[in-house]
Image (cartoon, rainbow, N blue to C red; front, side):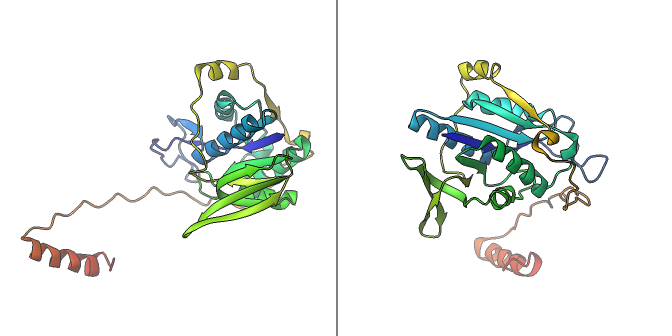
Length: 259
């Protein structure tokens, strides 16, 4: 069974992101880049499916500049068999739909039985590519899944997502697209053996022409980015407990408009 995992490289959650000289972009100087955390759940689930079935191939794919190879190498160190890097100036500034079209073209070439994604990337929080990808492929799709099981024949997958009071369960025919949510599994840490082995695994550059695609203007454009305003200082309410409680309630109602 071949499983393709779509990942995105994003700034580390601990990185202080700043608006760049071009107000439509972030300043990338000094940023530590990582695999988007939700995508790590997708990678881990693909590896578990392969291990449970005792055979198969897990292929990681990502779109972006040359630095994206670092993220793909991390996936190979976790255990993916090979990686595809959609690396072409034609995709510079690609929005979610252009990205989904590029991924769909790769998937049509690779012919996997299952595609796994993270529920959303933590940089822009769009969460749109999974559904767009499934629509372009004409495949069934389940998002925010907390449980997953492929049947023994590899023809259907049972996916469950959390809803209020329980789990909502779907049986989908394969091929299908699933989006992983936190809680689906616990991603493994790459071992030293895995890190060393990743250096020998293939990361193949894929150009737009290889997929029969050309430059596509993005339908979504960023007008500008703004830094969050500084957080106002905290306030300590003085007085005994009854007085302080009355003042707190007044401040929440009249000043903060919270109640």
